[in-house]
Image (cartoon, rainbow, N blue to C red; front, side, top):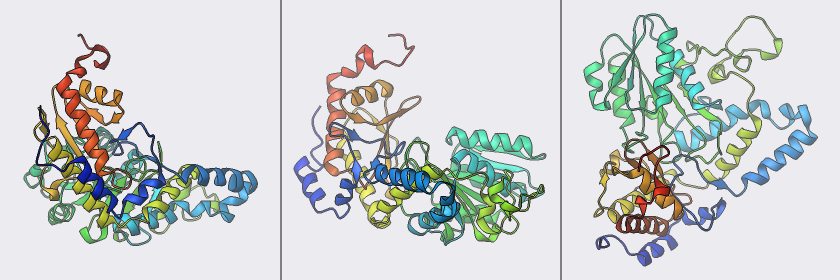
Length: 414
């Protein structure tokens, strides 16, 4: 197996890294010296300032300020404050439309419930059959709670026009397919959904922090996304929720907790939704989780999203070029307009190959039945990293080391 001679050499990659305006941001992350980390699309790396920021919040705001910090340190306003920062820099959302709270699954339940109530008399909730499973579980659970509604599953977004009709209430789509890395045209697809009189809900888990998003300009109704992938908020980081301002007055979400109440400290027995996007809050904000995400946003605001997207496409192009001659099938689109920030390669022994790479310190991941996924995070991944990771994949395939018993799946008969 010979090296792809059309791709840049490692020396050329190093020269490009030296001239990269984003490259200095790599120093703002904690990266183990013996690891090439291509799994930031599952869990982002740790920003160097996060431990210190968390320690300050714990010691000073919690330890010294105690309950006073809900006011003095602004804990009450964290969900909206961070939401505005996230919306302005990465989501293309004007202030007052994004809150950081809960998990992706909980936020999806809230916005889908609100969207269904905004389209009374329509019964179809359209979703992708191959979406991340939590999206399907939440959609299925909701249709069981809302009489007269039913799920309609697409094999691909290309089938959307065939199912859109006067009974379509809501369409839930992933901006990027978590398996293949295929990117949808948010504005064009949202416009098609609106032509049918339905509402568009987008899952941004694999695009927030990977590429510029323009929720307001695209006319999106609702969106959700997580804080622990490209946003580097840490394991289990709070997620975010976007609700377009035009839906605030009539939007009523089903998880009516006290933080979404109009006057929460009146302790009324009946629920009155707050004005604006805060009506989509439910319970007490997770202050420490929000603080970790806040430290990450400090880094993100140093990066131009357009430069992040340009480097993402360069890194994914590089990896695809370097692996083009290997005995694997690339399922991620080559067209940059249809590609997120990951590359998925198909191989019948993908699980074993990924395990062999991890043993070498090259961390990607695997999605059943046969997809090897490699995520490209432009703030801390370099071109030389990509070159070295592709070289490791080449060597694993050439040596056949992936056939070793230690790389077999648990319970696999060998």
